[in-house]
Every structure is written in structure tokens, then in C-alpha cells.
Length: 82
Image (cartoon, rainbow, N blue to C red):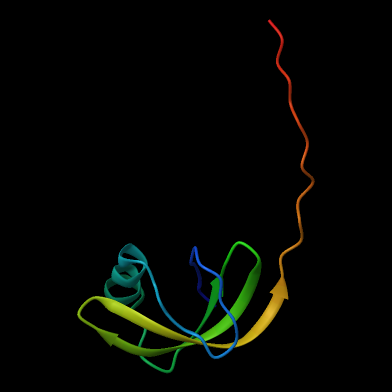
């Protein structure tokens, strides 16, 4: 299943659009059609979405369900001394 990243927060039943470059890739390379399921990733979670409309080089996706929350990665500080 194809996965695409969006920068804003999402929740179930939201409608979002893929970025221009992702939309172009979906239309021209993958040749996906409406009613195709894709995964949509944000900074916090991964969702299952369905393509609802493709028009004028724009892909509209409806969020169906949350697949999982992303785990926080370990954060550490690095100090460089010369």
C-alpha cells in the first residue's frame, strides 16, 4: 500500500489533499483512481485513507481510520568541542 506524508494534524473523517508533487506522482506514475486505499502519515500518526477525488492535478483523500500512533524517538543532545 502506498504511503504519503502530510504536515498537518489529521483525525478520522477529515478530508485532506496531498501535496502537489505527491498528487502528480499519484496521477502520472502510480495511476491510482478514486476509491483506492492509501496510507497517510503525519508527524504523530499513520492513517488509512481513501482517494475520493482526483481533479486538476489534485488528489483528495478522506481519512477512514487511525492505524497507529508513531513512537517517540529517543531525543538526545550532542555537544561538539573543538
